[in-house]
Length: 340
Image (cartoon, rainbow, N blue to C red):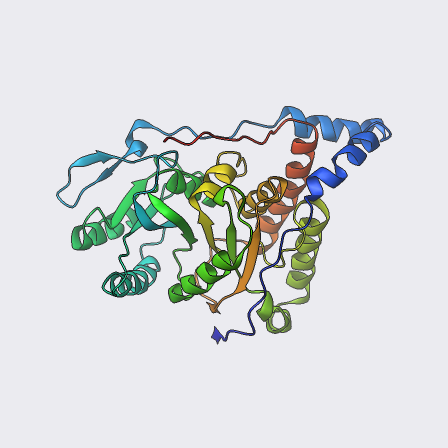
């Protein structure tokens, strides 16, 4: 059932980063906790790993329409096109064609309008066991590798890992993250673009515009079971309490970044599974990157890879670790250098 668009949510200036407001207080608090609690904090610190920006040699290249291998560019390089669309896909051979057909029709129509417009779609096959790569390559053959590229990961990294590698391989001045299921109407890219444009000021041209389903929350609550509502409310509370404030829907898979904001946030990203959106926005608020939240059309699509109880349990654990690992210094924020 298609859920209709409600009144748009106004973009707002991000609040003063909670990571900076509470950091000194929580560090002082850590000295007063019980020994058993200190062990948990110590475990969160020592088990932390660095941001995984490495990729295998095969993951550094894409196939052209003729089957020739060519190297991916780098996010550190200056942009050469207007928009990059990064589509993470895991076992999406059945759902992805609907999304790609809609996206390509919109992008091609927009390209044919008066103003110059160049784009690319990067499908990131996150170690799929089906024919996701083969399906995506059909679009490369149809539209050419200048417009559609496929990045096939040798092993499954998780949605966050797939989005990060696709983003690091993009050429766009703006970079859109869009789910392969097509749950968000692709033409709503114009709404998140408008939200991005309205943000003032943009320090170092950094800004993020998040598609949001928050206007649909009341209807969704009425349809979900009591247990699912309890888990979802618990997750939203943890997001607000530990990581991100001022954003009602952190999990919508339709987010638009300026190239500069993408470079700053994805270079520090550690979480590669479902909670990666929260860490991205946490990093953005720590850097005082302005964030807009914009209502979008959204449709429930069958076949979600998210398992409600276990996925939310994993996300809750990741939220706690995000907070602890940044506060204890196990994870650090990085300021990458762009190429001229």
